Amino acid sequence: QQPVQSPQAVILREGEDAVINCSSSKALYSVHWYRQKHGEAPVFLMILLKGGEQKGHDKISASFNEKKQQSSLYLTASQLSYSGTYFCGTGNSGGYQKVTFGTGTKLQVIP
Amino acid sequence: SQTIHQWPATLVQPVGSPLSLECTVEGTSNPNLYWYRQAAGRGLQLLFYSVGIGQISSEVPQNLSASRPQDRQFILSSKKLLLSDSGFYLCAWSLPNTEAFFGQGTRLTVV
Image (cartoon, each protein chain N blue to C red):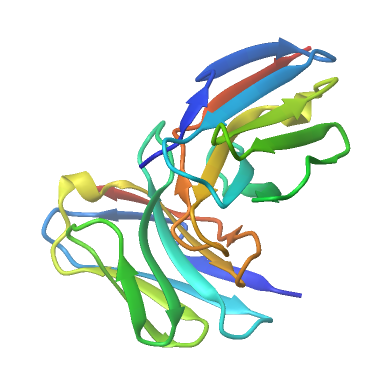
């Protein structure tokens, strides 16, 4: 079953922060975050595994709450390059098998 | 380093015509391979995945089929295209317990 992402769309000014949420009705083993620019392939951001810690690089980080079957992606001090559609993918077994993606969150950063 | 090649980049085909999209991976052995479809403004739908030569799992019953004739080659086919087959098709690879890397995609328009 497809994870649910919220919000569906968000517009930010440069420097503002954003949070994208991903929730599943099934128990999760892993959460995968990707960003896709229009007409391009999705680019991997990070993966969080069950029992793992919060991850992040640069100004993008994510958390994984196994009990609530939720993950959140945090974008701080947004840059124009952050614009795109963000997808969370949820896996219920180890490895990248049968990862089910949400419908995406379209994020636009404006000057 | 590993690379993934997917072709063609764009394709316009008439209804009822056959389809063959090819994907190859370089620089790794025995990868997991995937075909995803993305309808306009929608999420990523997993169509097929393969964990080895000749081993194909279908996620969604449909007008398409997949084959893996060689370790690093994944082919998406159809005998007769439908209008509803239009979309953005993405091939991806991963190793067990790692993130997936996507090809640049094929934009298919069935007319």
